[in-house]
Length: 329
Image 1: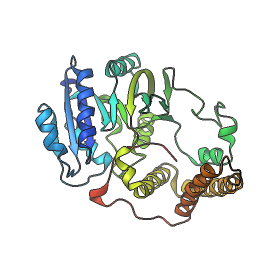
Image 2: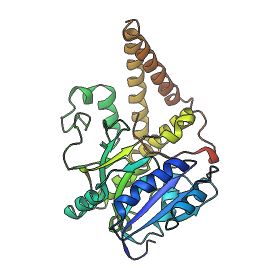
Image 3: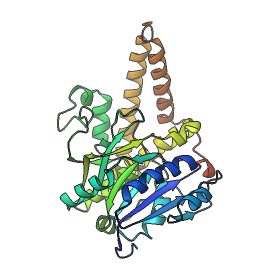
Image 4: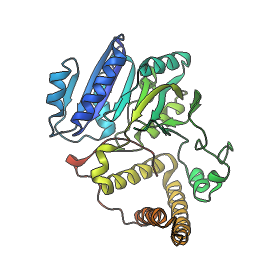
């Protein structure tokens, strides 16, 4: 159970073999938090690169929790969330770097919207371009719209569309934000609970935001807070295993919220969409100007199709897990 609030913000960072990223994350964070009453937790899932030792030397004020094993992304966050004393909890990936004023902007948005359980910032890629971070909840219906191209054809339709044509440039209520950076209200956590640890990696923040809504809360996005997110850089060495974990997380969510029939429809739509895309991209690959791109797309969708039809592949071994939730299906 979360303890009584003593700080304005409790920062929770989960790390795994990202020492230099973690140090940069904390340096940028320190600049933005210097006037706030806050506490910072680093939960480490068995790093062997000296992350914990380096953080203890440079940031002695950080409460380092070295688990010594892989607990999973949600479970690792939960360790710190259950110890947190802040009115708000800032969940931050080690590859997410706050730009000046980001923390103040998220807090301002949270106070402006008192029924907002979570606030998401505007995420930027390393080159400064927009990284879309707001999505509608997955469902069999959304899968049908996506894979029959209804969503692409009518992106702004309230029934068929999603947020793909929105440039993340106005403050608004959304269905969920990705977990690279989230400011979460402690009273909402007390209502909905912490992360569901059935999700080892990916889709746990989607489930969390849905549970907030089910408890009468909302989720908001503010463009006034900007955060540079390197988007899963720690997992690039293990792309195949991370792909498998991403698919597993999506299916765990679908099964939990839509049951076995919903999961079956989801898989059926994904199979149809994959076959259609493979056929179209294969034809386009004969155009010299598009050959390389389209062949890569065929390869990607073939992998999704094989996984969906039962060739699940191995996930990451306990000491190999990496954590950077992202929506990139």
